[in-house]
Image 1 (cartoon, rainbow, N blue to C red):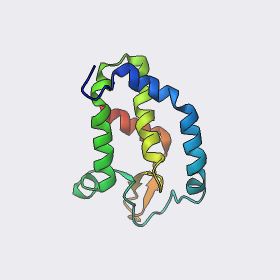
Image 2 (image 1 turned 135 degrees about the horizontal axis):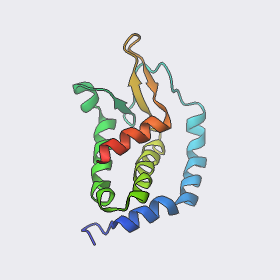
Image 3 (image 1 turned 90 degrees about the vertical axis):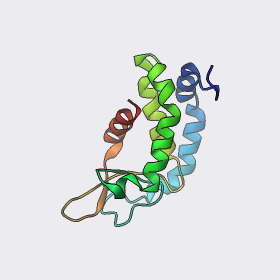
Image 4 (image 1 turned 60 degrees about the horizontal axis):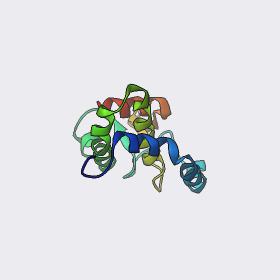
Length: 132
């Protein structure tokens, strides 16, 4: 096993497993999400993960914690069978979303300079890309 005891099997199992915990967490975060703003955001908060290039995006605290989350799972991701790989991006996505306030995956509109949520599919794509 690894130093932390996070074998690929353990992580994959945890990703599938904690459905009950996860659904409970989503019940708890449901109140946050219902009045959550997903469009025309002026200032992203600390849990948000920003898409795009440049220093502002790279040094945003939400991106830094996203990268550290990705790095924590990278070894197990690379080592696990292809069929289990989607579990990792979902695990990371869920972890960002279950923060309080929930982390959003945002992209800036070049015209208005406001931020909009990119949606779950693109967020999972971004996460998979980061895991490689």
